[in-house]
Image (cartoon, rainbow, N blue to C red; front, top):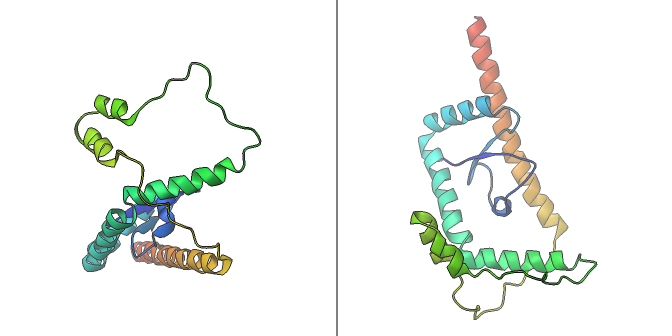
Length: 169
């Protein structure tokens, strides 16, 4: 089962992942108790935990292919460039680094990853086109994520409450 420690900062791929479908959310402010409960839940629900892990693995393998990551970076950098109030220039004395030079210095799995993800030629297709922003659809998605996370927090709170009550008896 994939565990994800919630943070105020987000990796770009987490937007496409859903709690309880792709990962188990871990509280940032009480990691130890949250992790202990997640392990306990996973041990008691092995089929669901395994399905969650497989869904996360499938998401990473299918939805995070390098072509999709490059599309994301293309759109991100183009939108970022629109915010510039100046025209960027290459500084005097700057040295261009090519992917081959960087990959040559790497070893083992890191080198294999770099070689595998290296762009060897320009893309033959145009970048994906993004659908227009739909505030309602985005709100529904965010609420579904928040609802699933609240559900986990309720289970966790109940677990610790029952455990403490049993110890007092």
